[in-house]
Length: 300
View 1 (cartoon, rainbow, N blue to C red):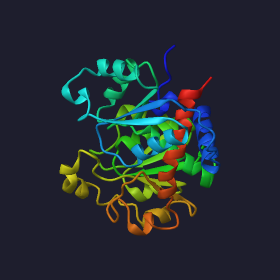
View 2 (cartoon, rainbow, N blue to C red):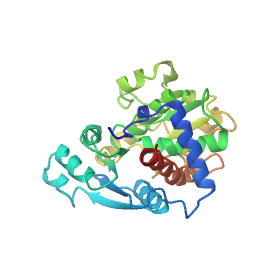
View 3 (cartoon, one colour):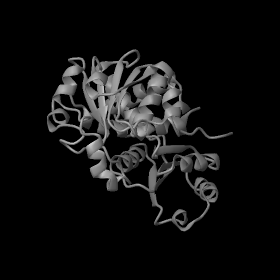
View 4 (tube, helix red, strand yellow):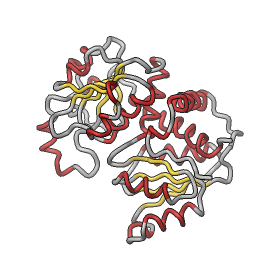
């Protein structure tokens, strides 16, 4: 029997997504120390990119469930010395119960999953960040209810987070307005697969009009630090500020996956203001990933 993987949001249905959100909220509201469904289980965590929220949330989640997590970097394993991914996947999956990868190429996670005998979770690639969307959508559901039929606005770089928002719009059936400068728009194939749910705008204020959720991310992601000056020039009109938030619904909320650069992609007044839910969003990484681990490892 092939294991169930979580490589992209398209790996789950809308009903499964909502079930994960509901379960995450249950786990958040009431933690039973005696509930240890993963006792004796081990999560292998492979990091080629640095992390704060991903590492802490997965490690803490496994501890809450009675299991253990092993941190592996490419510097500490044969992965960094040229061992074929296929071989590493077969060996590592023979010793652990689940594998989480945070890496650069999306194909790395896909290849690992193809040769793994246990569930593989995408903890982030340059193309997608599905675990963050579990937390984002949990946060939206908690403060504004189901997102179906509502409108989110992505302002900024068409990066991995933008790609996962496009896929979330497909799975949960909401509208996504995207404002990104030329040369920084999301992958055309990923966007076109969402059909009419995704619309593009040439300025941030128009994209934010009547939106229920405003989202952004840093202008230069990990590995793009050398492009910082160039990107700041390209994105100078794409800062989420009070004017952008005023274009959205009065009860619209603001999200950012963090870390954030205040007064760059978002003004300090917005991220630290009353419409921001970024810290609840960050905390929900723990709860949504506990629900995901339970879903992948405890399903009957």
